[in-house]
Structure formats: structure tokens, C-alpha cells
Image (tube, helix red, strand yellow):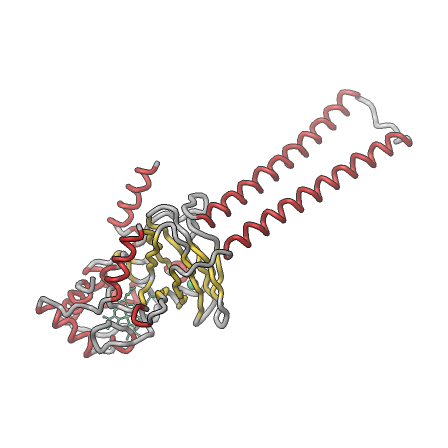
Length: 336
Ligand SMILES: [Cu+2]
């Protein structure tokens, strides 16, 4: 089963099926919150299932007894009326007790979902039509950086995700790690993630937000703390100046065209904030919010015609000739 899933993830990422793969099921829990929700769902299923079986059993017994006796029911006398009253009273009391118990369990679980505060990792996540911007917070301003469509988190530590909206309502959902939380413009919501095991967990916008809602996915990659720290230090570095001449030409094209109005590449004059930060775009598993695996080819396809790859997306087609396109994609693919 495990090996099967790993194979599926490998094949998924390899073939780029939908560009983006990984565990995405509320029943396949890998985090404390997701486990609590799965257990709650289990409790509801068992309790409600038992009630349903008992009701059907009572019905079957009543039908069977009536048939076995073969006569019309007599007018209820005073004793049977009293007995009926007791039975109904007990049934009502049991129903109230059961529903109160379930309500309480649900309340406790939901409270536990946001209850964890920690000085550890805080990520400010903005939902845009149709991608995600993640800003890793830090007390020291020079240790704050932006990335997109991919969250790396350390295993075993609670991660606070502050959700902010800019355009329409989106919803943050990583079924294997936590519950769902809406992202509402003008309101700050938050959710806590905690992964128990390293792995790749797929998330998805869970509130219909327009044409490309289905292509607003992201990955949460949970890593051992030392790998996470190494990743974070690498992300903090500015982009390396390109080593090969083609990539260097690509950088010049990037800076000469309108790309820099929307995209930032730290270490270059490009400082736009309307689109994803591209400083380390090639270090991410996917581009365009989970739509394509990150390869030089997919970068070229995207830049050549974003409106065909993701119709309606907020990146316009910037006309480039074949040489410029080749150079830009070489440059983007070098931004590890
Ligand atoms: Cu959305």
C-alpha cells in the first residue's frame, strides 16, 4: 500500500499528470488536525450507523410480531398507554443525549484545530486568482522571503498559516493535514498545520473562485527539520548570476520585457509583486499552481502562451521571438 502510493506519486510527478500529485484525502491523515477530523468522522459514522441499525431492528421486530400474532391491534388500554409513554420518553432522552454528545465532540475537535500557537514557523499565505503566494515570516526582516504554490514545512512542528485574500473568496484545504479554512478579503483567518511524517501533501482551493478554480492547487512538502532549514537558507539567497551565455541572454530579455513589472527575481532589478516571485522558480515542483511540472519545456510553453495553458490567467501573453523564448526558458530553468 505504502510502496504503491509512493509509486503513484513518483509516476504522477514523473508524467506530470495534472502536474501535481501527492496524498490528498481526508481519510489518509498525516497530521494531528487531520487525524482529529478523521476520528470525529469515524465517531459520527459509528454512532449514527448504530442508531440506524437499532431503528431498523425495532421496526423489523414490530412488523414480525404483528404478523406472528395475526390480529388487528386492540384499542390501547391504560397500562399499555403508560408503557408507550415510558418507551417514547426514554427514546427522546436517548436521542437528546446522543445529539448533545456528538455536538460536544464536534465542538471540541473544531476548537482544537486552531488552538496551537507556537513561536516556530509562520507563513502568510495569500490566495490570488489563481495561484498562492507564501511569505515566510521572521522576526528579522532580512529573513523574510516570498515563494509561490508550494509550502515547505518541518515535520513535527506546528506551522501557523495566516490566510489573507486579495480578490475573491478562496479556501485553503490540505485534506491529509488539516481542515478547511476560508480566505476572505479584508479578514484574517488562520489555520495550523502539523505533519507527522515527511511527505508530499496536495492541497487545493476549496471555494469556487472563477474560471481556473480547479487549477489553483499547491503542494505542502513536509521535511525533516534539517532539510527544511537547508531549504530555507537556499530560498533566502538571491538568484545566482547565470553561468551560461544563453541563460545570461535570457536574463537580459526578462529585464528588457514587461516581465519585471509583475515578477521579482531577487539579485536583479526585477521587483514586481503582481505575479509569483521567480527567484527560485526552478526549485519548485510545479508551475502555474500545480498545473505543470517544472521543466525547461513547461516553462517555455507557459511563457510562450499562458492564455492557452491556463485560459483567463492573470499573466498576459508577452510576445517573444523564438530565440528570446529559448533564452528566457534557459534562464528560468537555471533559477534553482
Ligand atoms: Cu481559489
